Amino acid sequence: MQTIDLLIKNGQVLNVFKKEFEQKNLYINNGKIIENKENQYKAKQVIDASNQYLVPGFIDSHVHIESSLVTPSELGKVIVPVGVTSVVTDPHEIANVSGIEGIKYMINDAKHSPLDVFVMLPSSVPATSFEHNGATLNANSLHPLYDEPSVIGLAEVMDYPAVHNRNQDMMNKINDALNHGYQVDGHGAGLSAKQLGEYKEVGISTDHESTNLNQMYDRLDVGMNMFLREGTVERDLQNTIQAVNQNNIDKFSFCTDDKFITTIINEGSINFNIKLAIKYGIKPENAYVMASLNAAKAHKIKNLGALNPGYKADIVMLSNPNKVDIKQVIKNGKIINKDSFNSTPLKFTKNTVHQNIHLKDLALPIESNKKSHVIGIQPNHIETDHLKMKVPANNGLFQADLENDILKMVDIERHHNLGTFGIGLVNGFNIKHGAVATTVAHDSHNIVAVGTSDKNIYQAIQAITKVGGGIAVINDNQDVTVMPLPVAGLMSDKSWQLASEDLNAITKAFKQISGEIDFNPFITLSFLTLPVIPTIKLTDQGLYDFNQQKFIDIQSK
Image (tube, rainbow, N blue to C red):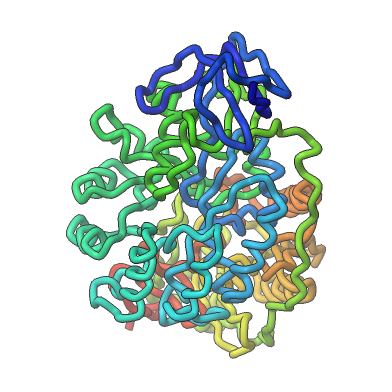
């Protein structure tokens, strides 16, 4: 009689191919589910799963781990216990800062976690050709990384003009992934149905940027697989879930994209997406299939997403599938407990913050009789409104308009100390005094700051420069609260517990300088610099209009 590692008996097991629960036993050996030969096995360990429901481990279809503000190994300590046993990550945040070195840091740190971290190689570093980031990755530089076992494809292609014009390097990147048998992720924010068709034509097969039903239907029409997103500010699932029905459900899975560690602690990861999907009418069986098999199929991962022989024994045990009530997680056939995690973040010693801005550089000449272009925040979304408003001036220079909530915003190059910076105006932060600055600024990750006075903005910038990157909040008394992010200016080198304490501290500090808002101010600020998302954004080269695909002056001529 063969001795196996684990027998789970009497459980209600989700058959992801039938989308229904069936009472059966699961036989597990060497981290995989094996064929049911009931009388031929003796198990070292037996779990009686009577009255329990077993579903495959959850898969996050698209996540930037850096956005959690902790390293991959620390993130694993938080999300594996809530059922997320695999993530598909795009490390383009750290790649935009540190290039290949940054990608390898993420791969190597992830090896210290039971979490499976599958890597999509960044396709767009830099995201655009008209701003300054820390590195440039062409197709040739990505070639060696396909030898890494964790690499499974090419990450979100956000440079639509490069696809439309069949840019040679971009086409080489796409074809390299396809020739390896891998898939290519899309990033279709703001694209029309015709433009999405161009993406599909070159082999881009997924998208996660839908924010409404019409966008969902456009993607369905061209045959894309879609990742329903629920991040810290990218709250899109409620507005898109109604596109899912029994005929097309195989095209949908879940992702978080960008989610702070504190948000994950408070509400969960993919388990939260599942809860929302069930709340908005998706049958529990279907929601769990979306969170497992559909994600694996979208990424061509053949041994994940089902509780059948030959599949990895990644199992989530639930007492109530309707409530996503998790009782136990099994990863690679091993029960997850506190002893499953014993790592500390890998060291990252490179200083990535270099700037020499002066207080006088922050002055913004304005004519008070002219309308100005103002970035309007859309709460809990990364798109912006393009506002045109008259703003106050003092001796020909902009001054904060607290009554109408119009503040100065700056974006400063920090990678090569080039001295470039852009200045713009923003509406929606509701800051009453003080400033915020951060080195998390998608996707080039320069320094971005917003505040009520040049002095406050300057001091906040200096505070994060001093600690080698991070997030700083300063009040009018020049009291500074800082969350250091020394790993490329993007991630903490602390445990997830201490990192979340730092994040809670700066959140508390922000509430003391602002009025009431219903969105996360830090991650919202970090996306106001991403020019591949509609409508206007600020870069170190100035104010960029997505719709016109060009830079514009703050005031029209």
